[in-house]
Image 1 (cartoon, rainbow, N blue to C red):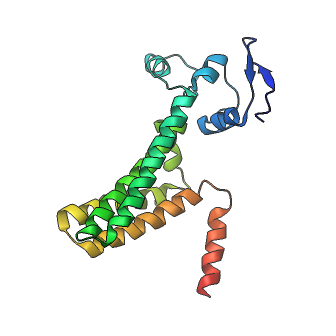
Image 2 (tube, rainbow, N blue to C red; image 1 turned 180 degrees about the vertical axis):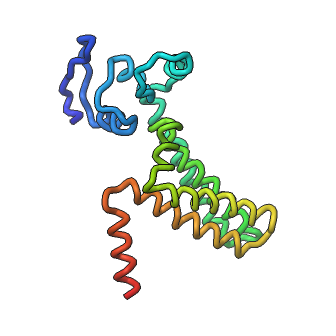
Length: 192
């Protein structure tokens, strides 16, 4: 695992095996791939040759670019959410908080598109185990902005931010094995 061992690719070229290679394969949904896909971090898993797939293949980002894009979006999302929290106690701070927190969540959520690709991300978001959390999260994101800009109701904006947080947490827990079950048990023990 990143110990400098070399592996042979199908073309016979040496390549270091690492944890990043395993992460890349796991996030792209592939166990094995050819040397061009390995080098370029291709997200396409279909084997048929269509014009659309050729265009996507030729415009794919390298793995290092994907990781950088992920890091930049995730950090910007975190900073925006944190900044929104800091502005909460200013005059009109609740509106600033709701907007910055919402856009921070959108950036953080979209950061994983760099790792998995947008199509794979959407497939995973709307999988059977995540569809309710995804819909609630998107509705809360949308309603937070409506409450802040259109309706001008601070209490509703704050309620939608809380729902955003809970939905985003439940959505994120779905990617960790048994995390939702643990959260349910923890909540049940706190209520009793």
